[in-house]
Length: 287
Image (cartoon, rainbow, N blue to C red; front, side, top):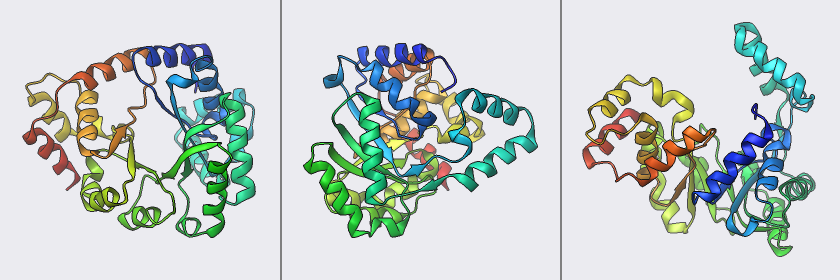
């Protein structure tokens, strides 16, 4: 969240005015500032929005530094390879996860305070390890959140390197309503593998990272498909439409970060579906 908070506030309000009403965040995004900015932007308009937040990741030592220091660190990291590698190693070393009842209760209460609301529509466990998914205490604490009216629905945000076994283990959680999965061409085989199990459980899917964290824009095969497609879509629009068609059980998060990106996304959302041939060719990128 490097741009001024007022810019994010304006962008969020414009998205809401344009009919986008699903907002995905987490307690550790930008040291909690993501939730704060979203809560401020939705002041007076809470009933128009669906808020999805996550918990389970603890802030690493570097992330607890003042935001000004963090900005300098990230600028240095982008400029110098060794520093960039050191920052990445530091995040891996100091970031942790906690899914015990004490921590999750503290996390949801703090999230609600930052979001300026007394409930969230969806609460996701943020990349829990497999052993946490089988914990009886985890099911109890989530049930208590629902009983208290703090959470309407809950689910699991799966890691980027998710496996079919991980998804099936998540589906065994009681009262599970949602799973969040990476949704892009390089995981299409995974979707085809688990779609029936997810559908049979009646669980919705939130698709994320439709651009594969930028990888799609460096894929020459994908760019050739875009260039030869007669619909004149941008690469981002093509990738987003593919993700929407891949995820037939829910919705997709495009991850808008600027007004031009919002406009491109809205245009892509209004475009017709991909042809079966284009969809199949993009799916084949996973091979």
